[in-house]
Image (cartoon, rainbow, N blue to C red; front, top):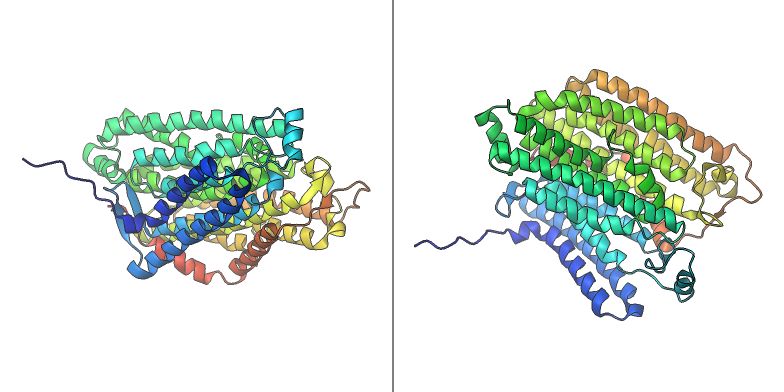
Length: 516
């Protein structure tokens, strides 16, 4: 009589992921047992060492084994070139985001206290702080890594929830503008839960069609069963809704400006960079690996979504008067640019070129985004951060260096040459042209021109307007914030002047996408 076969888990290949989750669990234990005055002193080095250690493990794995192409943990997680590249990007973005999170001035002293109440004032007076932001951030980062590497729709859903649930909480912990922060948290939770339901229902329908939730098995079923099935099309549409919500693609983008504005800015930076990278990793898994043989059916719909996303992001950004809302709509437009690369499928060589371009774009955009939000944390008003654009007038005369760095980040978003954004857009648009999506590229170029207007408008406001007498102050940055701004600016310059080494890494990673 044969016994039950134990599962096979390749712990070595999963070690970066397991290390992050293990540290998150240790962080929960620290919150439970360590004295309050010691918690931050333990959390900060634990979190930083964990993220740096996980990044080191990714590098060691590549140097030791080369670029793998395999599914591990009983086929549930794909550890291949794109997964390792995305893991590395997420970990780098997480390290710089945690440097911002380390500044207590961004987080509420007592989340349970009613905004403006004596309880809240008392918590501020005694120097209260929410140190649980560190294990919550680690859980979110681990969820991002799992979400992007899932080779199974059920595991992908688990990764989606592990990534999202901590972010729902973190969005409500802003130190100032408490009601706006709580509103953003509730809105993100309600709409996020709604989109997760779409994803789960779509997964059930795909299972009804294919008899499996394994991505490779779904692709095999397309060739075996055929593509003419209502369950398949409904399941694909519902899965798409859940994924497009996470990247903020139109018409599922309404949550993004409100949540970005209300959340603590370090958490906004983590969401705008790491979550976007993870979500596009999942989009590629679903539409290229599981539904690759259905591309003639989903590509026309994605064309429409990409065009709408670029136009909505670029045009609505012009109307914004809050700096974080403007950057949110900028993020929506960039999601549309990235979708042009997802659409550019074809032969194996074309797929590799498109994937390489997407990987480079995600890294370049993510680093610049964290740097831009780091600058936002330093421009202060009486009520906290100076969010309204009118308050940024004359910033170039008050603080030329800071305004110059922020202007450089905006130019990178616009895709100006000698910045990382130029090569990112060029690579994605070139791949789209090679994939036969020239009209989509035309829309992308026009949207980029529109987007350049509102970027330049902020630059003109900073350097060619007189500062108000009661204008904002520039906070003395902590060592972590200064390091984030410097690293982001340096990376934006290097990737704009000498991008070839990163392109080579992206090419090597893209050549080993696990399809089965």
